[in-house]
Image 1 (cartoon, rainbow, N blue to C red):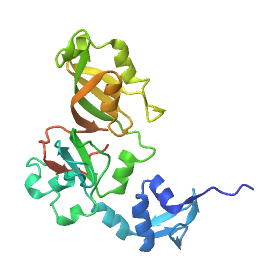
Image 2 (image 1 turned 120 degrees about the vertical axis):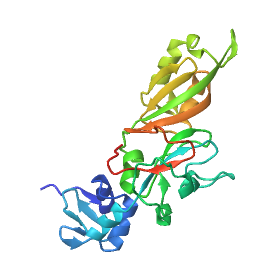
Image 3 (image 1 turned 180 degrees about the vertical axis):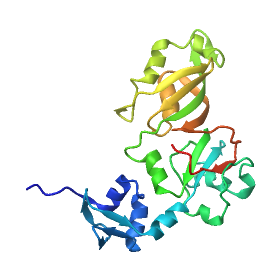
Image 4 (image 1 turned 60 degrees about the vertical axis):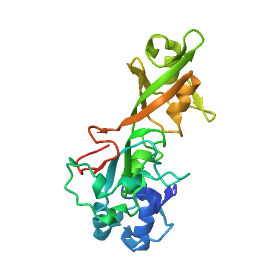
Amino acid sequence: MTEPTLIRLNKRMSELGLASRREADDWIARGWVRVNGAPAVLGQPVPVDAHIEIHREATGRQAEQVTVVIHKPIGFVSGQAEDGYEPAKVLVVPAQRWDDDPSRTQFHPSHWNSLVPAGRLDIDSTGLLILTQDGRVARTLIGEDSDIDKEYLVRVSYRTQAHGLLTVDIQSVFPPEQLALLRHGLHMDGKPLKPAKVDWQNPEQLRFVLNEGKKRQIRRMCEAVGLTVVGLKRVRIGKLMLGNLPLGQWRYLRPDEKF
């Protein structure tokens, strides 16, 4: 008889969407997790069909976790401070909260605890950035099996021998075969990029929709076909739109909003 496949408990809890791996380990250490009726232990291997029970104190704490939507300005890094630049997290203060935030959540200093970016946005880019305390949200957006797409508006310039540096009406002279290459066929870091949706939004601006997020991917893609990015703004992550959220301000993600 074939032995059942075993998997680490924290990984299985993450796969089931119960918690992030770090969160699962914390719950296990606190005695808030049972497997097939018995108290769980850290590092425990379990069969994939194991019955996992979560103490209500853990689910209650999870319900209190917040996710923040920021319109990140240029000049802020997504995560830890680096090279003298501040993290976008410093914007999450009452004075910077959007006046039209539809959420009824009251700000509390504890919302800063373990508030981390679920994905990055380069220092010289602006737009939609998600910070979260909830490991489930992070896994949805940046987990290994995440398929959430992200939409960007990208203003470009283009240099040709015939026309020199162009900053207007680039669409009229940019070769269609190069546009096709942006959509599929480029390699980065020795690996092929996934197909992307790339179209002209106007004669100077492209719209990118990506299902992956390699470091400075759009800028490097554009460089590969002779374009230079002069402005990059993320306007959508999954179903969530940046909308009217003002630059430099933030709001809470509502319980009814999904990615």
